[in-house]
Image (tube, rainbow over all chains, first blue to last red):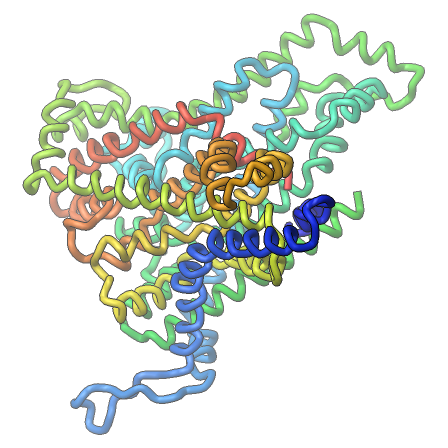
Length: 322
Length: 307
């Protein structure tokens, strides 16, 4: 990401000839002072709300609370080394939460990315009318806060309130959105509703940047619309697809609001530690086991960073291959 | 994807001899009409899916509690929107209005401050040369990758030590930091502020900070709006942070307040109307804002896509 930026950011006063040596140093000093003043607020806050919490989590993850002596008289903190990490990694609930997210991603990413890619190609095709309207209407769910989107969909899943269930029963069917086999689909639908349009706009913007000559050349060579889409357009926007998959994965491992609300609603298979973030919430704020919660948080952060590298690496290889 | 096949002409001919034939076939009016119908039909179907929940919310907000359950979702009952609105704004001494004001404070004021900080930082990264610049920028990009929910617990404990848990600062302070905004600001500064303009200002003897405030900042206005929208959505969506940091319901943003109302609906079903109407009131200004500010989120997503 930084590479193309670095190119354009050359020394600003390299081209200044006539200012003379004294003037140039003075200018450079005033520029350096301005740069320091402009970036200081950000880095002070960055240190306070990002670096310090991560450092503090690292510190906390090395200690455990042990009850002293007979069980009354409170607890004391003792150095525990990596015990919190091994405790988190061997906790069946924590492990299961990753399996849940993996399953969720296996369903959600193909549906959402495939859907937004298909919609972007449809809007991009010469046959589509009212392109601005379609983009706006498809993007609209993103304007709605995640919590409110979740509440609306949960009501749409609730018998008595839901018009969707009325339609299903009018058609002679029946469906329980909270049943064990269906609840993951209900969650995928909720997320897909929120994100498909957003990613569609990203893909559409990337498609617009594909040089028209390349597409015209394919059409002149007799390639049909589908073939042009699959062989020319999709490979040309590979980097946008990779970035989107990356951000989707980083979002998926943080899943909280949707499972929290489904759990609150009594969906039987969504327990209070269904997702890693729910697990951390429970360990930290319900059980007050800060060491365990900190270790679990850092493991999750490490997974996020590792995912970024893997997806970027795959993306680079894919780009090199086509 | 499989539905796309309907809109494509018969197997493509790669050979150049048949090129004209293929083009001719694609221009057959009947076939083009069919494809146009299919493409736009699929898009309309997708739009129905995206608009359905919001339309349901709009209709549900006009019904009284009895009709909400007695009538089907998309049929109108007795028109009680005004009574519902009055209820939302007066229940618990008008706490909803207070939540709404809090949301505006967290999202509008917080994001404006955060965007100014991002733009200043991105501009400095683009226009100035200083030691360790690319390393510092790497740190900012690293910050983009850190999942925000992951630092919520240590941030809560640190905020506890600083004595700001359960105050406005507990949500405002973290909202001020937006590493992705710094990245975008650097990209925008490259695109919108030509180096020659700054040179001219220097020749005229303007100080560096004055140049930034008076010349660069106005040129960066569209980028400012885009970053503002990103940060605004992030803070409007920050339900987890609010849940962790706040106990006092007078400090809640709308989302946390609606969550609390929603959690009692199963015991007290009359709260459904409150949650539904309250959601509608919270969502409508956002929809209007996003429709009016299309140009800005569009350019932000484009900048994201082309990197």
